[in-house]
Image (cartoon, rainbow, N blue to C red; front, side):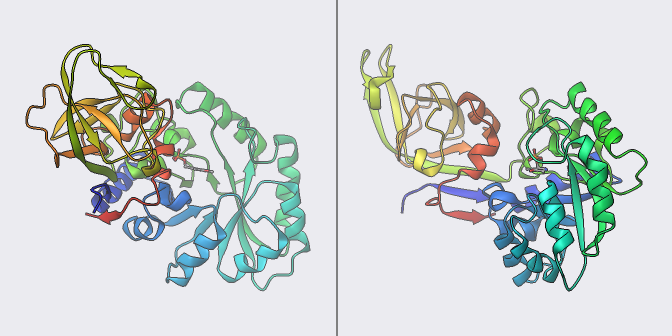
Length: 353
Ligand SMILES: *Cc1c(COP(=O)(O)O)cnc(C)c1O
């Protein structure tokens, strides 16, 4: 069997959720499990995450969880896409995010068997989803008068990924839009949970930190006390000796400056390893940190075995997870750990430890 595997550490979910609770002790937690729990497997993550609620995008995923007996509140982060979906929200007690006046109108026209709790989303600068401050109060009044709506929670989402003053600016806009209302609030993603206590509100919405990665470019997950929930491992399947001047891989982008040993690892971009990871991307071979060399191909990549004399065919390789974080690999490849985790290749076997 091809030696690549993703190992999911269930204990890391518990540990990382405890970190969320330490930072936001007064808030309830929506565990964000969109994108198949950031590539970790929806059902497995939901089982391991003892949060008060679950937040995701896909109605199908929410219905599958309900069918499997999941009873916790579920927040659908893009709400409903057509009025036809509303009866399913009512029947299965799902909470939609309402981010547009179109959705408000659909709720007003709906005739549902039970009333829905809804989240009304304000656009406070991200300019993706949400009502602008000028529309927000009017939409809130309409929802409060709507017979299909049981209760409203106010929410927004931060564009700032550094947790600095711009996040506080968005809080000020949110406070102004919702002034006078005593309704429950939900603002904080991982970055705000870690760096913006005034944004914690009644419900926080951690995603990436539950999976043990950092939302920040300037702070490692380890420094934030987080543990990686996924370790992607494989093995060396060939070893070669290069002479000075020999080049490696497609496009010969790496040339050995002196005689050296390299290893070929059974992992490529079809497994979810970023093709843009350049020579020098950190990787662990036989317990030692080293670097990739040359271009990542679909099924394989190359590692520098200089200084790892005991490395041979069959040696363990850690692509990301313990000892080399997905954040580091992502940074080298010009992306973020979010993309690596949720881009794990469908052909990679996943197991729990
Ligand atoms: C994805 C998402 C989150 C979680 O964000 P992280 O940065 O992963 O913590 C929270 N809220 C909304 C609306 C989201 O779409």
